[in-house]
Length: 85
Image 1 (cartoon, rainbow, N blue to C red):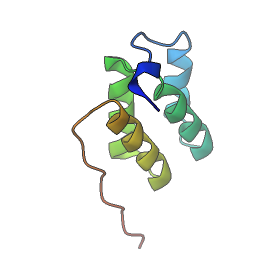
Image 2: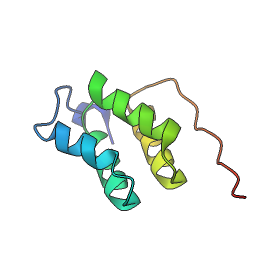
Image 3: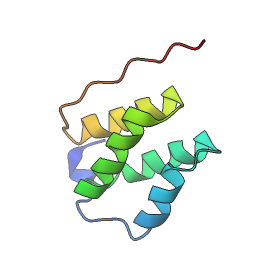
Image 4: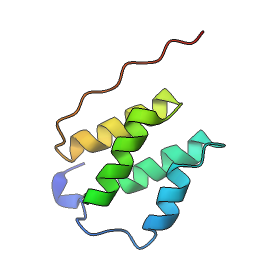
C-alpha cells in the first residue's frame, strides 16, 4: 500500500472497529478490524493497533497490526512469539 492511499481522519465506524478489534471470542473479526483500521492513519487508530500488536493472544493478529503500523512509518518492533506450554 502506498502512503498516499491512507486516510488521516477517523473512519465513521471507528467505535465499531475498536469493539471488533477487542472481541476476544473471534480472532478473525479482530484481524478484519486490524485491516480496516490500517487504512486510517490517525492517533486513535494507531493507539488501537499498538495495543493489539502488544497484547493480542493470536500472533497472526499481532503481526497484522505490526505491518499496518510499519506502513504508517511507526518505529516499532514485532513482539516475540509467545512460547506455548
